[in-house]
Each structure stands twice: as structure tokens, then as C-alpha cells.
Image (cartoon, rainbow, N blue to C red; front, side, top):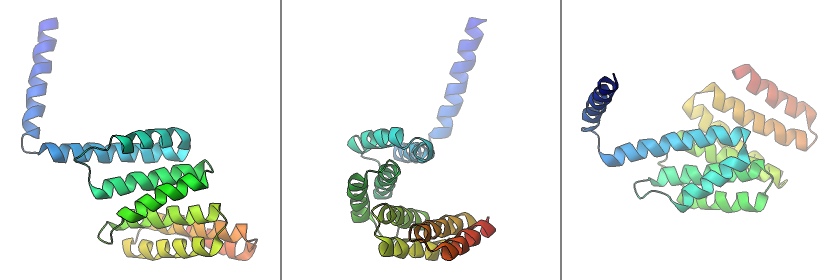
Amino acid sequence: MKLKKEVLLLALTLIMGIGFLGSSTGQIQEDSLNIQLNRLNKIRAKEPLSAKNELLQLIANFPESGTKEQLFSTYTLLGSSYERISQPDSARYALEKARKLFSDDFDLRNQFDLRKTLGSYYRLIQTYDSAVFQFELAVKLAEQMDMPYYFAVAYNGLGNVAMDRVQLNTAFDYFFKGRTLL
């Protein structure tokens, strides 16, 4: 019985290995890094301190096969993690690193993430005009993507800024606008 399991495992390994023959090692590593970044994005939402620590380790050991866009995403997530644990100086440092890596040819989602995170950062340090500017850029990017979730996130950011400024009617309008899109 044990021999059958070993033979089956070996056969499965060979079959899966054949599927990867057509893929380059670099592509596999790039996909693996994307999976890791997606996982860290989910952790960041619930456990920003844990995500921050993992992101710092990832940056310290960033793979040579990683792309500029992936490094940008890593710094953006790190900035967002710092913002969530109320460390504005560290958030600013990470977001400045992300901004230096930024390129207009990045996909719209990454551009949106940068604008949303910068808006949240400026809100954290109470630089509301800059926060509004970044969230309005995020709305424009959401228009280009035509995805309701991104509109809702951007309008929620604008609503939060309006709440901080005690502009309750404006805040309500933004929250309602974002909510109706979902």
C-alpha cells in the first residue's frame, strides 16, 4: 500500500512537472510573487502590523526576478499598512519609494492603489486638500476601469475627508454615491 502511494505521488509529480516545462522559471517566480502580494493585501486589511513585518522582509529579500511593478505594489502595501497603524512618517517614506518607482504605463489598478493610499495618508496627517486631490484622481481612474468597487472605495475616501472636515451633507452624498454603486 505504501509503495502504491509513493508511485502515485511520483507519477503526479512527473505529470505536474511536464505542465511546467513550457513555463519559464522567471514567469513561475513572478506568478508566485503576485500570489504572495495578494495574500499580504488581504492580511493588511485585518492585521496591518503582521502585514507590515512580512512586507519589510519581502523588500529586504526582494527577488531578482521581481518586476518594478511588483516592487511598487510592495511599497504601496507597506505604506498602507503603516497608515493603518497610524505611523504617518513611515507611511510617507514607503509611499515616496512607491512614487519614485511609479510609471504611467502601470496597470490602472496599481495607479488607483497609489492614489487611494496617498489620499488615506494625506487624510491621516490632516492635509485634506491633498487627500481630496488624490481621491479625485482615484475616481478618474475608476471611471477608466469602469468597475463599481473602485468607485465605491474612492467615494468612501472622499466621504471620510468630508466627515473629518465636518461637512456632513457632502460626506453623506459621497457615502451614498459609493454605496449605490455596489
